[in-house]
Length: 194
Image (cartoon, helix red, strand yellow):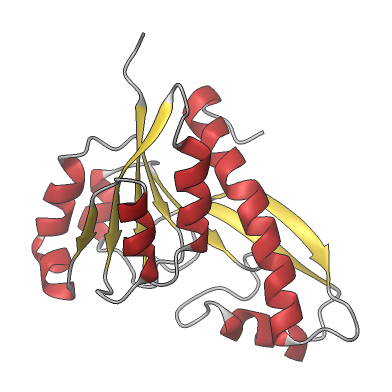
């Protein structure tokens, strides 16, 4: 039996997508989550990782810039790094250390409604303000710029006339939870997202 593929998760907040990944790969024969990193000591994502016996590590901006976080991540031999609600821009040196191994999930149909500050409710409010007919999710590779890496997978949902930030957010989050584990699994087992 070959060694399992390793996933490292980065999360800044509640970590509901991290939870889905932890659940999906807990008993997986080929893939495992080996660590969760957070830039927020109060992030509930840390507790979620600990609940699954997965190491949960907190870091600050200085450690990220100094390369300490990169060294820690390298110690886990990641086959894929998944940014699941992680809000900081990774340094170019970090991105270059893991070519085509870092992916992010974003709650809109990029390139629309991406970029610095576009996360969570800010995205959904922008979609509503623009009177978009559709929104959805984008899973994409990470490069040195916010939300500009090559897309891997998109899924759409309709924006309803009566939608609020909360109802739209819930519908988009359901798409994230449904598709992120499946796309990650496909990438690691077949090298393609479909």
